[in-house]
Image (cartoon, rainbow, N blue to C red):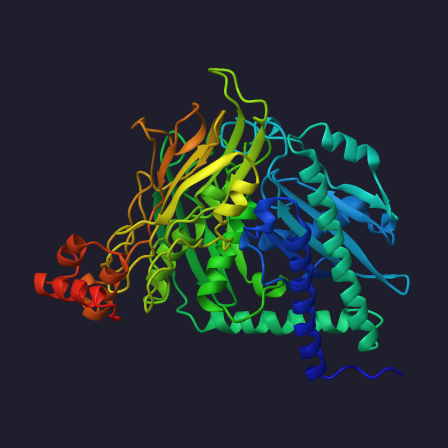
Length: 569
C-alpha cells in the first residue's frame, strides 16, 4: 500500500508546481512572436486539477489574465466533454465571456494524462497583436466588429492540428504568421508544463493529483478566511469617475466583510457604453479579487481556493458586467480602474493600508502604418501593425513612493524602444519620465512619462489611442495631491482624442504625456531629504519643491551645488 505523502512533501510539491508553471510561462515568453508577449509579458500560465480548479499560477503574467483564466478551464471541460478528451489534445478559444474578456486574448488548454488517466490540465493565455475586424481599439459598436471569434474547440485532436481552423484564422487577420506562431507557442508551453508535471509525479510516485490538490486548496482556503476574519466586520462604499469614450463613467462599489467572505457589489455603476470599453464580469472579477487579495492576503499563493472567498456582484449590462454582444475590445480600460474603486471603499474599512490612485489603465497605443497617400511612396514602404505597451505612474503607498512608469494593477512591462521599432517602420522620438507628474504627498506618486511617436520616411499611419485620466487624474489619498492628467496632440498643436483610431499624415508626430500616480498623506510631512533627492533627480521642479513641499531658495541652491560637485544627496 502506497504511503500518503507528508505535509512537508506536499509543501515541496506545491513549490514545485509553482516552478513548473513559471517555466511554462518563460517558455511562452521565449517562443512567442508578438512583442506584447515577448517584451511586455502580457500572458498567464497555470496548472489545474482534473476538476478544473487552478492549483498554481506563474509569477510572470497579469492578474487580468490569470484570475480570469482561473474560471476558464471549467468552461473547456463543459464544452469539450470529458468523454471527448484524449492524450495529445489541445483546446483553444478567444471567447470574451468564457476566456479572459476580449477577442485579442487566445487561451489554450491542454489535458494532462499520466499512465493513460486524466490527472489535470495546463492553460495559458497571451494577448495577440491582431485578430482582424476593426483592429485593436474602442471603435466597434458590437463584438461582431471586433475580430474573429474562435469558440471553445479542439486545436489539435490526438496530436493532429486542425488545418481548416488554421486556414480560417490566417484568412481573417492582418498578421497571420505572427498569430499562428503565437498559437503554436501557447501549445508548446503547455506541453512543457505537462512534461515537468509528469517528472514530478514520477519522482514522488504519484498516480494522481488528488492529495496535493486537496492540500493546496484546503490550506489556501483556510489561510484566506483567517485573514478575512481578522478584519472589521463592516461595509463601505467607494466611487470614482473616469473619462469614458464620449461621456464620463462612474464606478461604484460597496465592499462588505462578512465573516468568511468579502463581497464587492458594483450596483450603481454606469451602464454599457456604445463603444468597446465595456468589461465582461470575468475580467471585473479578476481585478476586484486581485485588489482585495493584495490588500489582505498577498503572501498566499493564487489558486482557486484563495480566490473563492471573494464574491463579485454587478448588475447585468452595467459597464463592469457587459453581456454578449457588447463591444469589449478595450475592456482593460475599465477593468484596470476596478482596484482603485475597490480601494476607495476598503480604505474606509481598514485605513492606512491601500495605496493612492494611480494611472490605472495601461497607456497603450497601436500604430497601423502604410505607404504615404499624399505623394509617391518609396518602393520599400510597408504596411505594419505595431502595438506598444506603456505605463503611467502608480499611486503612492502609505510607507513608500509610487513607482515611476510602472503598470499597476496589470503588472505588464513597459516595452523597450528597440523592440517597438524593430516591429515595423515606426520611430519613437522621445521616451522619458515626466517631471512633476507624481502627486505630492508624504509619499509621492510615481511619475508618468513623455512619448513622441512618428513613422519612417514615406509612411503615414493611424494611431489607436487607448488612454484615460485626461479629465479625471488620479486622486490623492489622506491629504495627498492628485497626479498629472493625460495629454495627447500632434506636433503642430492639433489636439487628439484619448481613445479611438485617428489619422496622422506623413511627417507628423504624436506627442503624448502619460498620467502620474497620486500622492499619499500631507506633503508637509515628507522628509526634506527626500524632497531634495527628488529635486536632484529631476523628479520635481523648483516650483513644486517650493510650493508643495516648502523647500526654501537656500535649500534649492544647496541641492544644485551638491549636484554640480558630483556628490549624492
